[in-house]
Image (cartoon, rainbow, N blue to C red; front, side, top):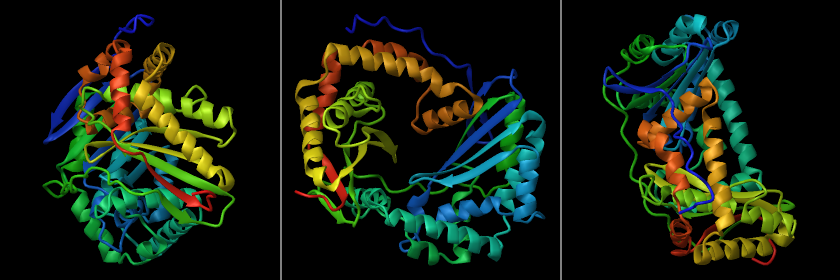
Length: 420
């Protein structure tokens, strides 16, 4: 066992699990601050965007706060701003989401605006033209940078044929018809397939009332889930030419299932290898010792219930080949030798010590609870995490790291890399 670090006391949040109208909600009530954070998510997401209309759902959700019911876009924005209400909607690859953050005395107005946005969006042509133009500019800017290009190339090569491989473009945003936005909302905004998390000055009765107010009049049923994510395809190193002084690099491979016994050991191994900060091997060996990049890191991402390891870095074109060689060497060395005892102790201490900071205010609590729900965690899983991390041995983390070498690291590059 890792005897250098005694198990920390269990980190506990007073989470209550509530079922209301077929919806599961987690609640952390805290009346000491007069703020309510309320987050929710549907299954579905951008995976259902038609081919050639990538970005359809994100554009549709952006329109929800551009006027609803009797309020045009200016009146809607004024109503939210006047009472300090933050209302947002967004689309992920495998989900769609909404969030409200408001003072307790503005909560009735926040619910009114959020409900109206989902049930009675105006979708006015003038507002759509403006929001579409903004989206086109953003997509064009992504295509003009090595970092934007390499991300698109990585996902395209990693999951060919799956919807996750497609990215929005200026052309795809321009091709979305106005009626397509309502089709996207009708598919996604449903009264089932929802997860809800709330924190702050709201009690159980208030949460139940909010769920009924927001979701009871949405169409019944749930948005369809997307197709299962396959194993990451093996591909030869992908290079996307781009006239720029630096090359962007994105790399990754399959990770363990979120419910694999090696999940936490893998997180520790990745923290040691590339988890951010100057203590990671990649930062020390590639930035500090050789000055080849400003920053490099890697972590776990969960999509469609599967975990993948993804990392990024940028470097001068002339040093791209050297940086990738060092990256692959460090990756292989971790797979073959695992961590040192000092690295294990430091990584576990950091992960345990930083976990409470992820729940330090109502916004973070609601967001963190929703993320746990989406990954099918339980309050008991959260409470037991410090002890599980502290119990990890060198052999546990070495075994998890050994998976890194089971298959080649996939690497995509965008820029004018020399020597590749």
